[in-house]
Amino acid sequence: MALSTEEYKKLGNFFNQILESYNYQVAPKQLEGKPGKKVKSVREYRLQLIDKNKNTSEKVVSDLGALLKSASKDISNIEYNAISPNSSKFPSYGFTFEGQKFDLIIGRGANKGNIFEMNTISGLARAFSMRKESSEYADLIQKLNDSNDDFAKVGIVSVVERTGSTRKEGIPIENLGAIIGDIKLTDTTGNHWYISLKDIDGDTFSAYSGAASLFNAKGDLQENSAGAEFLNAFGVDLNEMQAGFDLRNKKKVLRKHIVVEKADKTKIKKIFERAWGMNYFYVRETNEPLGLLPYSRKGPGWKVFWIDRANLNKLASNITVTNIRYPTLKSKQITIFCENTYQKYVIELRNSSSGEYPNDIKFKVKK
Image (tube, rainbow, N blue to C red):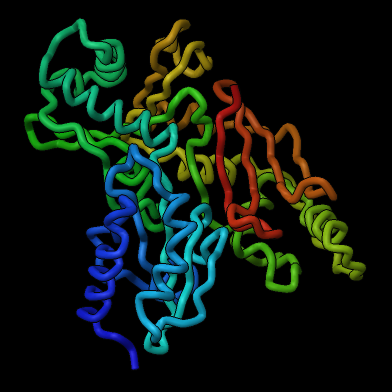
């Protein structure tokens, strides 16, 4: 019999009690947990640091199995997962209780990118409240003003982390800024502005769906899948990709030949329009110009531009595929290199859960 929401909340409170001394808690907004992100039959609890600047994850990983074993004789099948079945990067402990399978996912401490984002949010908030040109963020604010005249005309009263869904499917392109943004700014009229923030190493600007549909559980490429449709737009040879994985996995199978399509700039433009989205500020820490727009400058500072329809057209139009790398014995990644007059790109298809076949698509700008 399935547990009730109230019983799931009680379990969340129990986890908080045994983990508080380890600087961990169940994500407060999901104290009752939720169905697993990938394995829906499992009840997933996200464990996060209370003090994100103090990383105690190694201690929790070391001790949590014993804590669960000693907590109740009704907890069984305790198993450590180096990568959770419901996460692409975090470890977890799985166990069974009252006939229900659980997955406790152990979030790590703030990484370099997280710390950079938090520092930028707090720094911008101080700068807008102080309104002093001597602020270390004065240069960034000036670039924000320079890239959008309407933004320059209003005052900012709030700077916070953007929270909520990151799912782009079904969202109109003109509304994607509210999904892509990392930082939400609120002006004196109540209007929201969004910043997609990258540190100096932050070359990834978008994720894209479809990769997980490319292969079935047996490693057979699905030529009518969303992932195959994506790759066909770039002229990827699906036969060569299948052959690369067959070689890696020592499979000797006679495969049906799949017609190789030519790269289609119209389809590529639509893909890049959704990858970039629009109506937000792209902000990246930089020490050299990346050549996209004229107000990028040399020296430690910021690359800033507002993505409106005109800039989106520059970023997404007339993109040419220059090279494609297929899986080999040494690599299971598919890499697409492409470019237009304004920007060079790298698209990577890989498995972010340490598996064999791709489940993740990342778009990167190339320096």
